[in-house]
Length: 113
Image 1 (cartoon, rainbow, N blue to C red):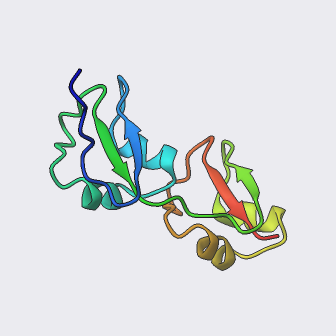
Image 2 (image 1 turned 90 degrees about the horizontal axis):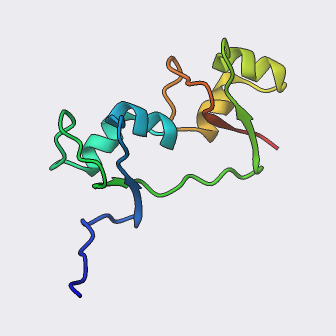
């Protein structure tokens, strides 16, 4: 039985492409930017993702508090900051890979402890 070689990925974290996935959706679900995905996967054609192929992800960002906010319809970083008694600046420090003007329903945002 032949062994399957994984594409090189320094973090060792991968996303297996499913039907309907796009780099944009993968980035959102992974809490990172499309730019980061493209940098990590320069040989991947974003217009021709193959179901079952592997996309390299960056190392997982730890959340020091272990407390998350799940984005709901209408949430903004400002509204999340107000609801959790913190600042947008602090949320951005804890979540450096999110796109603050494009939060997605179901996305998890790390909160301060």
